[in-house]
Structure formats: C-alpha cells, structure tokens
Image (tube, rainbow over all chains, first blue to last red; front, top):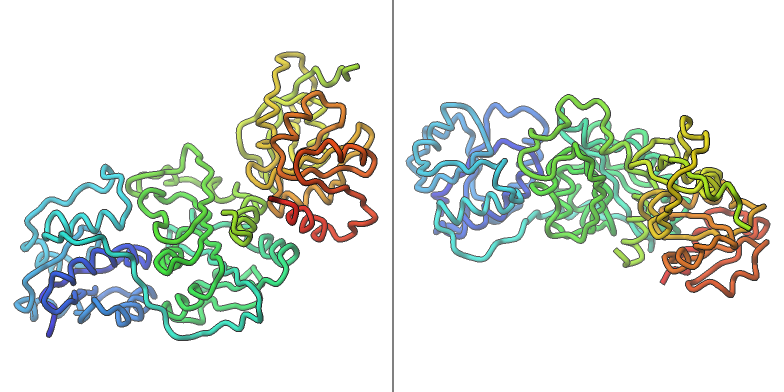
Length: 312
Length: 160
C-alpha cells in the first residue's frame, strides 16, 4: 500500500533528524504507516545523496518523489504535510500551499526546539493526538570498530556552507594531543565531510570515507562524541550517544540535543543567540568568532573526563 | 605580618588557554595572588594595570576558582612564599581540565579555598600541610612526577 501523505524536504541533515518525530506522527495516521517525501529535483549538494541513504532505512518513510514529477502524481495524495521549513521551487510549493489551511507560526517567537516545532504542526494542524515519538536514525551494519578493549572518542568539526564559520572550533589538534597523552586506553576517531579535521591526526580517519548511515554506525559505537552543532550531533542525539557539544553562533533553544546525555559548552556571550532563528544571531557580520575561539582545550577536556568517569 | 603587596589590588584578565586568548570579565585579585596565578599561567595581568593601585581590598576568595580557566576540577596548589607551582605542570593540568589555583600556606583565606577544592596538591616544601587538607591530597615532588600527565592522572584518581 502506498502512502497518501507527503511532505517536501530540502534542508540540512540535522533538520531532518529533528523532523523524524513529526514524520512518524504523520505516518502513523496514514493507513500505510508511511509518509512519502518530495525531494527537490534540482538539489545538488552532497546532503541530498546522504539523505537518500538515511531515508531508505527508515520504516516510516515510503517513496521519495522528485519535485519535477510531483504534478503527475499529486492525485495519489490526501495529506500534504507542510511545516514551512523546506522550500523547493515555486511550482512545487504551490501544490503544497493550495492544501495548506493554516498560517505558519513564526519560529522567531515560538522559542521551541525544532523537534517540538515540527510536532506541533502534526498536532495542531493535522490532528495527531498520540505520544511524542523520538528522533530516529537507523545506522548501517558497518563499519565495525575494532576497539581492542579501548574507549572510543569520536570527533566532528562540521557545519555546512556559510554556517560553518561559526560552527568551527579551531583547537581540535591540541585537544587530540591532550586526549592521547592524558587518557589511557583511548581510541580517537574522526568523522565528517570533505577536508574537515584534516589538521587533526586520529587513530581512525573516517572523514569523507563513509555514507551517512555508516557514519551513524561509527557514532553508535562511540563512548562519547565531541563535536560542534552539526548534522552528526543530531544523529548522535537520535542514537543517544553521549555528546559534548562546543556551541557557537546557532540557536541553542532551537537545536540543542534532547535525547542523548550531553554537555554543551556555551560561553553565554551577549552576542550568542539562545532562541529563535539563527538568522537573528549577531554573528551576522562577525569576524571574531569568540563564541568558538574562546572555548578552551581544558574546558573540553574537563567535559570529556567527566563523561568517561561517569561524573557528567 | 601581612605582606603589603597583599593589600594592593590589580585588575586581571583571565587567560583561558594555551594560545593566550583572553575571555571573561576582568576581576579583582590582590596583587600577590595575581602574580602567583600569572606565574602559573592561570591569569595574565593586564599590562596597563600592572602599576599597582590602592583601592578596594574586597576579594571574593570563594569565587577564585573561576579565575583560572572557568571550569574544571578544582585543584588547590598549596605552597609557601618562596616556591611556585611548577609552570609546566600547572599549565598541562589546565589543558587537561583542571582548574588550578595556587595559595600560600599563610594565606588567611586558605580555609575557604580548602573547602571549595576537590583535590589539594601540596608542595613537598610544605608537606606538613597535608594534615590540614579536608579533601584528597597529593604531595608534589618534581623528581618523582617526571611524567606530567601521569601526575594529573594521579590527581584525577583522587577525585571523589
């Protein structure tokens, strides 16, 4: 049975992870138990390929429809789940708009976590009345890390496009040096995309070598993840892998981890936005990036030691 | 007799990491403490304030642990006036997440700091002070702890 519910998606990895509770809620109301996704046919960057890798593993996701073909199959759908935070092209969005019978709440004033924001649509506008589902990601079966009896610390210094500027922490090389010198029986691993962490030597280097579901498998096997606010942080959150997050200019209230044990290192600078849209943050035009550069290696090491010692 | 320098205040700015990046609000410390912390690498006295000023002699000793690197295991390094905590050891400790604050044995506020500390490091020159420690303590002797990381691992093992 095909789903008669569809939602558009063209957004970040983290946004998708945070959307999964709402997708499950919507899928549960469809007789098929699934929700289809309309993906932007013109979407070019690497995230699209990674999304497909995640989507095909999730049991509540049915078919993926290219936006250029949506007009031909629109009669197959009764429910058009729209949250206002995925934009494809005008023609495709017009199809969703004509089924929308509500005004989009302004994220800047709702002060909600992104997960709750999406779920509210399912409840308020589409009639979902069940419990709040959890974020869900299903990892691949490989790679399996040969831990050799050691604990695993996985590092990620991610961030996409222009957002990477205020999600980049410059001291990962120094941090790895202290981790290896101080913590016995530890295995350091790095994950991510492109040239991320190229200056940071680790025991295992998975950067740019894995699919996203394989990266999720690495995260799942880790004892703690040290990262910035990025897609892999949200995957770790969904997998409930302990997290230490070095937080920069993005919205803490909107994007903080909600499922995994976590320690957020946030300097509470006046310019760091806590709520609302990231675009309200004063980092616009910021060239200093104090929110990241002033986080010390010692501060991160303290968080790591606390986690590994069970004192977090 | 109180060291006259102890009654004079300077404004210090907290230095948070090995790269010397400043952060946090400047705060007041007595010059003796500030110089000691600077010797440990925990703070840096602002150049324009190194000229001593008389003024408010209030010192929030209970908040003093904040001044080294903002967070971390609170380690009190007890010494006498003629010795300084070994700079390399203090700096490495900070990089590993230990919030190291030094204090002289005759400091009138040492009782407050002892209650705040999680671990006390005692210089071998003041080894008798070990009986005063109210939390787990370790005697520091440079010749014994040649491996600085092994020393801090030992400190960590003492945390309750």
